[in-house]
Amino acid sequence: MSTALSARNVSVSFDGLKALSNVVLDIVPERVTGLIGPNGAGKTTLVNVLTGFQAPDQGEVLLDGENIGGRTTFGIRRLGVARTFQSGRLFSELPVIDNLEVTGIGLGLTRRDAAAKAEAMLDWIGIAPLADRVAGGLPYTDERRVAIGRALMMEPRYLLLDEPAAGMSAEEADDLIRLIRRIVTEMKCGVLLIEHNIGLVLNICNHIHVLDSGEIIEEGPPQQIKTSEKVRHAYMGTQAEAGGPVL
Ligand SMILES: Nc1ncnc2c1ncn2[C@@H]1O[C@H](COP(=O)(O)OP(=O)(O)OP(=O)(O)O)[C@@H](O)[C@H]1O
Ligand SMILES: [Mg+2]
Image (cartoon, rainbow, N blue to C red):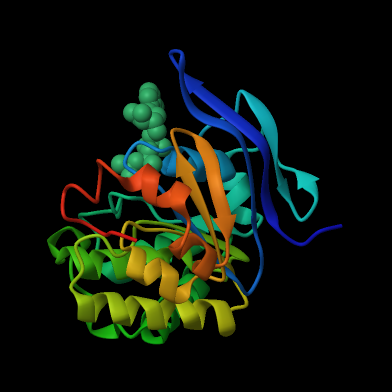
């Protein structure tokens, strides 16, 4: 039995548009797997499939060898697969600490245990001073760190991060890299990192997949992705033209 969260030949269509075609990808414990590709490539759709938010038209999602198709998002979260969203999605009226506590209670902790765990998690991430701030009033980058803290409640085995560095300064992105490294080494988590900041992806990922129009067009270690003609081609006319990340 393989220890991984895996997409096996996953396909998804929306009204005839192929968002994913036969995608194969493994997220492995203690490794950072990168997922890059132009806007609309299908990256978020793949995270939605892996976490039960979107049923695939074809293919399977395997968690440590077991098919988890048909389970609820909540059921998959309880099995140790957590995610963040591209758009934050915190409980905006609640204080930061409650955002984590509520998740702990949802995952089966008593109120007291959830409160203790939430406090320890904020401390571990280094954002304890934010505990009593209302989540909706946080700057974007703090909101992202809280979202990661919430996803890490109950120490998931797999963590899927959908563009966690979007809008961050270089310094904030460096902090995020350090945090992701600790999530991998200290929590032994398998991380999937979706990111448009190619420098960050090449820096931290052990293995990178490149999606373009729903298909994996390349995969391999950072060095291979960096020098891939196919990848360069996929990015031409999108990020490259817009002055964004160029490989
Ligand atoms: N619920 C939906 N209904 C219809 N079309 C959708 C839906 N979700 C995604 N799509 C379409 O599927 C394609 C893939 O979208 P997706 O959000 O997965 O891309 P992405 O790679 O995450 O893009 P981005 O980098 O902009 O976040 C796009 O063409 C998008 O418009
Ligand atoms: Mg997306």
